[in-house]
Length: 392
Image (cartoon, rainbow, N blue to C red):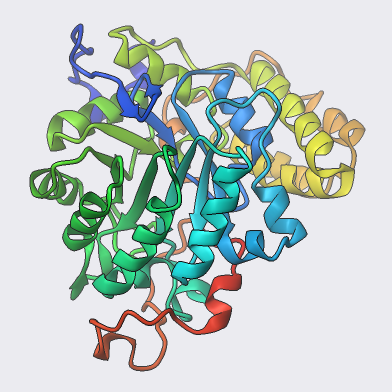
């Protein structure tokens, strides 16, 4: 890779040494390199997972699926839980606030042979989730958290279970060390920490020192999440924190070749230069075709408009291009919009770290009235908290 494509943060990061970064073990599943695609609502559907997998290896997790929706047979939840015919392993992120619903959803998923791995979402920071006591609000109540994790692990049989969470609600209410202990005590194969609080959302730098503290606090593997924009970031995170692997979120949005770069750096190789616009254009068309086939023309291409914004960010003159990309409704229109852009236009050296995805500043976390007054309460939150089928 041209040295210009290394940011100053990673200018002096040495390549991986043979055997330095062992694979992750997830029951019978071997994750090599130790890289996991972060579950992202509205993003990590089958077409996106398939695109990412064409570039590199790792574990590619579905977007969040509501346990209640699965138990009730809701069409949207059932479709979110679908995998492509070629997907293996089948890794699903499950969300719920009620042990009974989570346990039943797990029993059905495992009994029907639909999954090879279940990840639990205790990190969603969005208002519509936390205001009902779900997502990143749950770890503040250790007994409830333990009951939820136990309900899944006890019904999962030989299917491995992991969990993902944040540092806490805000700087005053941190929960990650206890959440890690709950995961360890209830039999999770690993825990993943997004090194920001719910109040931070996706703002500012991730606190990698929290990942290091969690590594020291538990005896099961810890995966770090936050600010993996370049392949070299992953090596730096593991070396800095001692974590067992990395979870990649916004860094791969519009940059699925990040998984190729990750495979290279973990193997001790210098990554290839990023693709020119002509190659990116081909990836976009392929992605749009996959979305249309999976979700139908209207739903799939409406979704593609979001991805198109991420693919083109950073390229010269792309702001004007994105105005047009926000309006296409057919594959023919997409091809027509992209055709005039020179195929040999280079990818700018700074574009890997251009913010993409959610970056809406900080927030005061919305919680149910009196939620923090009774932290030992293990009662599930209000009934409609479990109805969420998207959120982050």
